[in-house]
Amino acid sequence: MMTAEEIREIEAELAHYPVRRAGAIEALKVVQRHRGWISDDSVKEIAAFLGMSADEVDAVATFYNLVFRRKVGRHVILVCDSVSCWVMGYDSLRDRLSASLGIGLGETTADGRFTFLPTACLGACDRAPAMMVDEDLHGPVNPGGIDAILGNYR
Image (cartoon, rainbow, N blue to C red; front, side):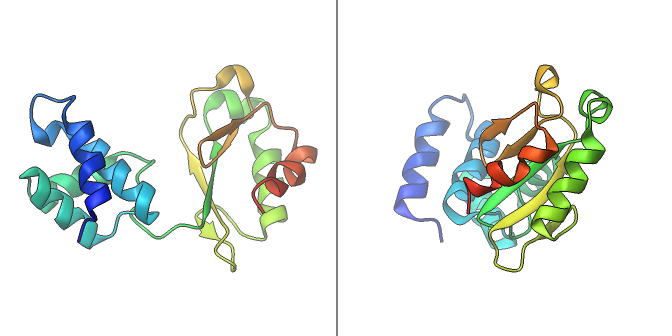
């Protein structure tokens, strides 16, 4: 069940849209910010709140890579695997992150602190290779600086 705070925040976002369903992404973002991810139950709640079907909300949720349909760690690390980042050292960055975290892409550390995910583009080609931890963009990232960056989130 959505909390009063979630409902208030979603209603504030919906005020910017001509129809309620247009605010589906914002509703998903609000619920994810509070719960960490979007469960099947959350999809159903949001759908009912917006007057949409659960399938419609799920289609929106699964289209956007920043909406997490599985439980994630406390911090989500997105490593950009676009052409620019790939050319500028994506492999080294990915490998160093994997070694430092002790997990591969798509996995969460045993303590639930970090989830490590690829992303098609962070929109930071001028800062390649780039990564994002939660909402903090880092780049260009030297693989030797990974541990210092991760230390800010431990």
